[in-house]
Image (cartoon, rainbow, N blue to C red; front, side, top):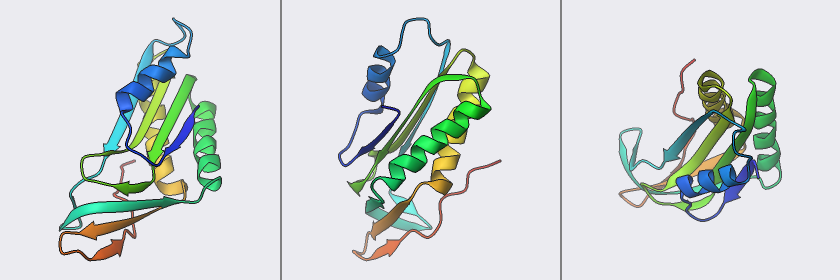
Length: 146
């Protein structure tokens, strides 16, 4: 279950805990996680909702490749990516990345890598609904940092 695409809202803590329950006690010494939620603003405008589309099959394959790349760069025990699709409201979680490793440095670095890589590589498309009822496609991701 390293990659999940969810058409409904999810509880990040519950998914992380459930995944940890499938691991053996003592397999990891560090856990790093990131949860991204929908903002009610973007590019100076009030946003009331978003439709997040993906390319089924291709999206999961690319997210699995992102995890594989993280495994080749850092010594990690396991990783999890959960991503929402469909209609999303402000405040709802959109993405969860979690990494388990023996030590914190690998967990932090790999977790950040997962998030930054999926933002640039995974085939997702966002269509926002603005406060005035109009719609627009999001043309670029918010920048991460190097």
